[in-house]
Image (cartoon, rainbow, N blue to C red; front, top):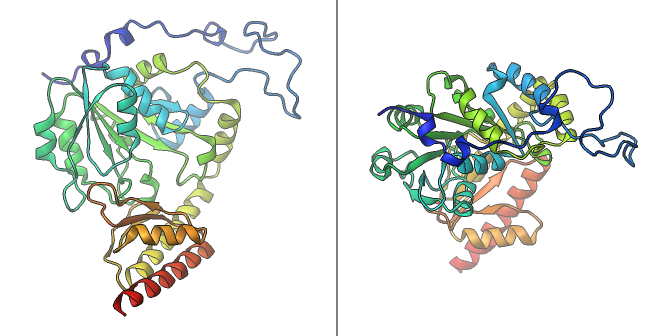
Length: 358
């Protein structure tokens, strides 16, 4: 049996009557708004925010549609990608019955959201080269498997997953395949957004938090077929994206050139930082990265993490994750921040390993 969307959606979601605001009941410009019990006298600010936002973010979606070269009805906007992840669970996965597959080490929110929604988790760890284990994934799939979560470029390893492997899963799995592309702007790999027309079971996640530098706005994007987007819109909260976020995101989307310049600079600095750290004594490996961070394997990684913390430098210790033993994930900072990091690492390595030898 091939992919059948209606067979995947939870029965109660298929029959759900979503919340309807007055904005759903009229079109065009209204002269007097007395429908939503808003404060008609305004806001205690220079600019008023007394009106509820557009619940479907139409202007923002039209701009994103132009940037991404897809239709606006293929876009769902969430309060960060984490909301998109949660709504996908609530749309497709029956609590206490269905399961999903993740490929650790990967973005932890897939597992957290599954646990919140009482969805069983099956794990197919990546291979030693941080690529997908297709045979293991195939073994795990059963009739209750609703979603396979794939992060590419992957967090925390930094590498892009083999496109042919992802396409193999899309072609052979009759459930939903989510490809999380939070870091795609830093990669030379082609986005799967343009492949939506080829795969009705494909969902692509992206964000404005990374390359676009808008983490504080909390705006995630979900791209899929109009049918999938329609179900997600039924499940979401009525006004999930506030007016300020919508306005600022629209402004930012006019600055594609500036964002491309930042991406190029961050990639250049990532390459330089990786080379410097890889040349340090006792560093075991700096893993290839298609992101704005690098994963560094070094003995006594936890001790290095704590030393950097004492110097006011915060990185992520990923040593507890499968296949990431003795590894730190380090975000590419400014030139000055990278220099301070490198100096601190050299100091710790010199002190730690010279003392050990003596």
